[in-house]
Length: 316
Image (cartoon, rainbow, N blue to C red):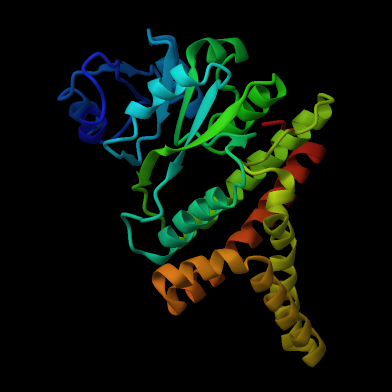
C-alpha cells in the first residue's frame, strides 16, 4: 500500500477488498486513506474484484493483486494512456524480470512469466493477466465483470479476457505499467498451482465449446505463440513414463527418454537461455527440471478436467 500511495495523485480513489483474510491485512488497511470493503464470506478473486469495481466512482479501473509491488512511475501512465488512445479499452501491465524471492521454484515461475511477455511481438494482445491491468469502467460494466462462478484464482481472468476479445474490445500491452511479483513458491505449492490452473483453463475451453463459442485465447499470447509450451505438456509425461519403463525394459526406453528430454530442452531453449544469461548455468538447469515437472502437472490437470467435465458433469 505504501508503494501504491507513493505512485498516485491525491485525487485517485483507492479501494481495498478484504476477502475475509485471516492475517493482519484488515488492520494494516486501516492505516491508509483508502475505502475498505469487507466481504461477508470468502468469495474468491472474481467476486472481490467485482465488489471493488461496483464501489468505485472513477472512469477507469486499475486492478492489482495483493502480492505485487507497484513501481513509482507505473500508475501515472494509465490515465494519460486512455486519454491519448480513445480506441483502447484495456491496458495490460507487466512483471519486472527481477524477483524479490530467491528460491528456485519462485525464480522459475517469475522468469517464465517474464519470458511469456517478452515473446509478444505486438502491443495489441488478446488476453489479460489480472495481477495488474486497467480497464475503462463502462467496458467492465458492459462485459459484466468477472464470472463469480469461478471461485479460485485459476481461470477467472482468462474467462474475462475471452469475453472482452469476443466483444471486440481492444487490449494493449503497456510496458510502463510495471509491477514486481512478491509471492514465494515452494515446489509442491508451485506444482499445485499448475495443476489447478490447467484444470480450470481446460474446463473453460470445454464450456466455451459446449456453448458453441471458440476459445479466443488461453494466455496473453496467441495460440501459435504458445505451441512450444502446449507440446511440452505432452512431452514431459512421455519422458517420465519412458524413464520409468527403462528400469524394467532397458536401453530402448532409456534412449527414448533421452530423446524426449532433448526435445523438451529444444522446445523451450529461449526460456532456459534467458535464465542462463541472467542467473547462470546451474540456476537454468534447476529451472529446466522444475519446468519439466510443471508441464507434467499441467498434463495431469488437463486429464482431470476432461474426466470431471465429461464423466461427472462438473462444469466449474
